[in-house]
Image 1 (cartoon, rainbow, N blue to C red):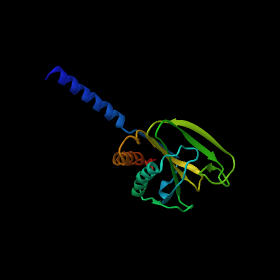
Image 2: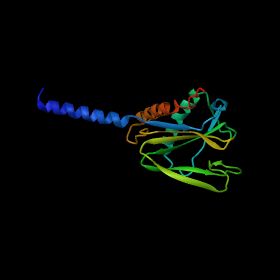
Image 3: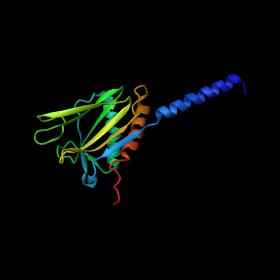
Length: 185
C-alpha cells in the first residue's frame, strides 16, 4: 500500500472516529424519590415558560418522538386539564439558556405552566447544542417528578428523515429511564 493510500485511509478512519464520537448521545435523568409512577395514566403537553421556542416542524418532531415513547409506557395523551402528568420540553439548537421556573399558579405553589398569576422565581443554566430536556410534572402535587436530557439529539443540518430518526433514538434512550426503576428495599 502506498503512503498516499495509507494517509487517505488514516484520514478516513480519523474522520469516522470523530464522527462516531460526536454522534453518541448522552442521557441523564433524575426523579423525585418515593414517587408512585404507577398511578399516572394520562399526560398533557405544556409549554415551559422562558424557554427558547423551536420552529413548528422541530416542535412536532420532538413531541412525536416523546409521544411514541410515553405511549409504549402505557400513558395516554390528552388535552384535559385533569391529566395525571404535564410534560414539557426545552431544546437547544444552538447554545441556549434553560429556564427553571417555579411560582404560584392560580393558588398554591408549583411550576408555572403559563397560566395563573402570582409570584415566582426563575433560575437558568446553559444547555448545549442539540440537547433536548424533558420535564414531567405531577400537577396534583404541583411538583416536578422527573427530568431528563439527551445531548447531541438535534442536528439542524440533517435531512428530515435523519433528524426524526435521531430524535426517536435519543428519546427512546432517554425515556428508557421513565418511570425510574423501583429500588428494592
